[in-house]
Image 1: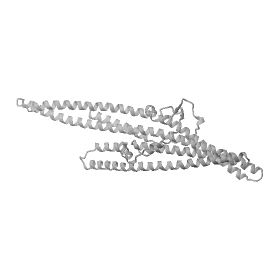
Image 2 (image 1 turned 180 degrees about the horizontal axis):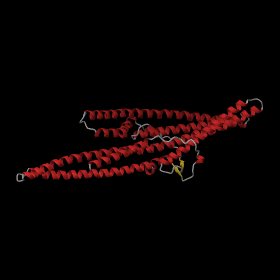
Image 3 (image 1 turned 45 degrees about the vertical axis):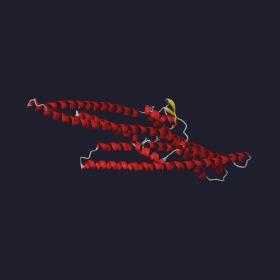
Image 4 (image 1 turned 90 degrees about the vertical axis):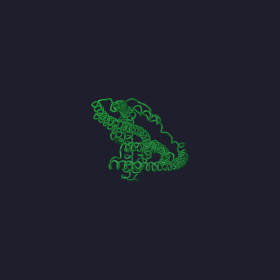
Length: 396
């Protein structure tokens, strides 16, 4: 029986390790060949940021595997209860044997058998007790690892949502700049035809446009790759036609209510790494010098993680405040770009400026809009990352 229990514990531990490794795997590299136009057609669906967590927990295949692991843990827990029942039965039998041994009217042979049986039961009880402890430790450790892995999957999906929108903003910017570059190519060609320009100038302008078009294609490939990854995280077929909902605005009200020291204390308490390390330390005994050293090392790991969490939380909050200031500055720059664009429209209508100048000022304004959206998105995700720190996940 001891061999079977040890084997079951090993299987559960192996499953737990697989869960953690799967959740920590780096996301696949972006596709290099496909574009969004090449994607096979399949089911279309819309996902908003607020839906991501529940969809991942309900539909993700790795989460489903984690639930199967929990089922195994339930079986292990039932086995633990059986150990407890057997242990109680041993106690009752041992009490009866003790009465026999202490009975003056009992024969010596009976007392000898009773004493031998009692000794054997004592050894068996010790074995069951150790198996009960091992089973409970395994259950608690694996449950923590599963919770951590599931939350890491949720965070990964949320991060992809934010990254996708960042890519779309970059695409918008490149497409806005393409109009200005196309104007530059036409102007260089006209100057060359009139003898006022060189062939080299035309080639340079055309090369710049070709580079920009390549960058657009690269971003489209990356966007498609993110869609494939997101589909898998949400439990869909990889080629389902996912539509990303609007990027939420940063939660400034939440930032205004942050109490750093309170959040640090909560993050340290919720930290999966600290909880897991504490449990691993509790499993160790102090019977040998080696075991004592291992316990000390675990304690050092816990102290180091406590300090790391404090520093990460403070750094993350500083980053949020810096990005708030950066966003405010970019919004002012947007107001300036809008005013210049409005003036340019009037000047163009009066014949004061050329269409090339008009398009350049329009491009500047549109690009500044994108800069503001990007700043909002960056601030939003850093606030979300702070929240995940409070929930017990590491910054990375």
